[in-house]
Length: 338
Image (cartoon, rainbow, N blue to C red):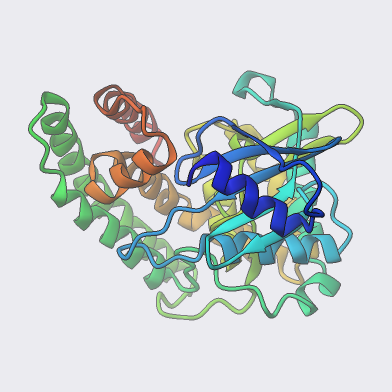
């Protein structure tokens, strides 16, 4: 969408009078899947997202993010952007602009982990959960051990579609083979441990959570006077609390030291009537998410992911990006728990 067309769309969404100047549109740093812009209308600034859409990807990213932020705003949670307006037909969302600094892994302190855990716990208070029935299930939501294992099985199988002809593509195929072998062993251990704990693999989880999904400090901004704010919720919805923990400590963009995991779970699960069971489940399933993130990193080698990247940033150097992603997957691979 051209900036001048987007400017008119945003002007209409904001309800600006016809005589008012059209908002100024400037591209922000490219997202992984969407195009993100800064819209300036007078002395007000807004973040504008144009969401990726493709017949092969049926996720409604706009609906997931916008309804999640409406839910958070209704609960008085202010560490996320406020939703302003959206256009479902054109796939456009307008949000409060969060102006601040990204966190680097070396800057993460216990207070940041506490803020993340409090956000999740507040989001799952009894009052919020009672009003959140309209939220969809999170992307790739899983509510049984069997479902988690099948989800990773599917991602491992998709890596067979790495067909590029560059040397880095061949290296990725070799890595995918080693990952499949490691996953088979991790799955065997998980099922053994589940049986020892008396957990049936097909048993549905009794206590779901409202999950920000793709949750971590890669999607956090520090603001003077406001503290830590979290952004990007296009995969959000109802999910397994174990997945929230697994993703938070497995995401490769801004790694969180595992020394914080027990502290995080103690605080994040304060809302629950069975926090001990949730902690045990999170530990049991942790290798699932480590392997899953290796697969996600390797998505760069799959055709549909490349199309999303081109949509978000047409100037991407795909060979360099593939190389960087393969190196990132290799670093995570050595950390996969037994």
